[in-house]
Amino acid sequence: MPEDTNTTTGRYLVLLEDNAVAAGAREMNRVAGISAASTVESVTPEDLAAADGIIFQELGVAVVNAAPEQVTRLARAADEPGPIAVVEPERVVRALTAPAPQETCSTLVDESVFTWGLQAIGATLSSASGAGVRLAVLDTGFTVDHPDFTGRTVLTNSFIAGEAVDDAHGHGTHCIGTAAGPRKPARGPGFGVAHEAEIYAGKVLSNAGFGSDGGILNGIAWAVANGCAVVSMSLGAAVRPGTPYSQIFEQAAQRALGKNTLIVAAAGNESRRPGAVAPVGHPANCPSILSVGAVDDQRAIAFFSCGTVDTVGQVDVVAPGVNVYSSWNGKSEDTRHKRIQGTSMATPHVAGVAALMAQRYNARGWELWARLMQSARRLGLPSTDLGAGLVQAP
Amino acid sequence: MDEVVVSVADDSLSRLGSVVAALREAGLDVDDVLEALGVVTGSVAPEAIGKLRDVPGVAAVERQRAVRLPPPV
Image (cartoon, rainbow over the protein chains, first blue to last red):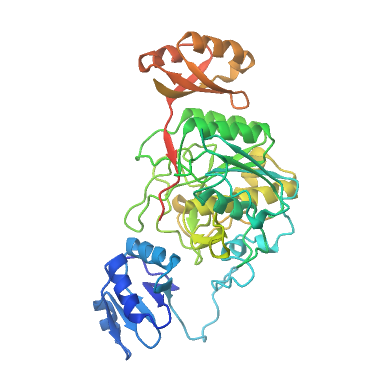
């Protein structure tokens, strides 16, 4: 069971499509093994706790007790056509009599103009745009004809033998969208952090999502040679606790920093909190690569986010990595954007902020690293999970 | 053959070319010389990896790992 917090109960709300209550009940059972009882009346808390879930027929809403993997399956079903429309954490609602807690950031999620992620990192309040800064994303490539990037400077290169840079996977396009996509896309809220940066899209993972050290180092060298201020890498290999970091990636990262290129990389998605915290993966576990964990829209650590397990290989900062809206590789209006989650989504938020800082302060290399750490917002959670905290735009 | 990555020590970066030549001599089939990083990629017979490590100016030799997207969650 997920932990309850001040604002959520640990249960989940499942919104079913109109007139699809029966089909929704079957689908929840099929994808997540949840047998929810149906009711037309109110139920007691005891009823709710005892059952897998309760479906409020009149509302077309189910309240379910779901383990993280069940939530994942439900969320996946919600992304696809079918009777499950939306899955969200059940919130705690309070009467508005007590003074509001001292909080600098609202816990309300209003995505009518910008994604919650852009708001959480303060990018919507920053006048920096990343203009004139080169930002590389090494991933599954780029959807070269995506309308979100019309008129933008995008340079591409594929380091995968036999595959063009075009992104048949979608992951690379999503990461590029977060780091440097538009503030006013054709559909949905604005999501691009460094929305005027010059984009270097390197394909180092195949369309199936696989690559190797050699291709990644090639991509890094390409970014360094082209003067990219920041390299975003939402990729990795899981490691066991106690595994030493790669000396070669560490040395390469130090040399890249010396040539004014900062590398940020995803910490990994192998944790299953609160029960299990997995170590930061390769190559994010190298001391000179900035490793990025994920938080959700309540500023809580994401259940999957890798943590600091060993004496080296720590999480350095966190960024929004749950329910992240960005570009996708589809060819229709409905498939050109998508919401997904992972430390992969947090990483390009950090790369984008780094590009904004590179523009604002004319900072590069270790100075960028220092400014990211200096300004990250401390969240009152363990530093082993958050590092310095939630990155903030300059 | 094993795919490997080789890093060249800081004090030997200025003579990268001769280090690469010595790596070839020791059995490395070179794919790329990444000058910006002081890294050489290539493949080598498993029993010759030790010989690469002994080449003067080599800091480290590692087998290439498979790297992937973090698993979807």
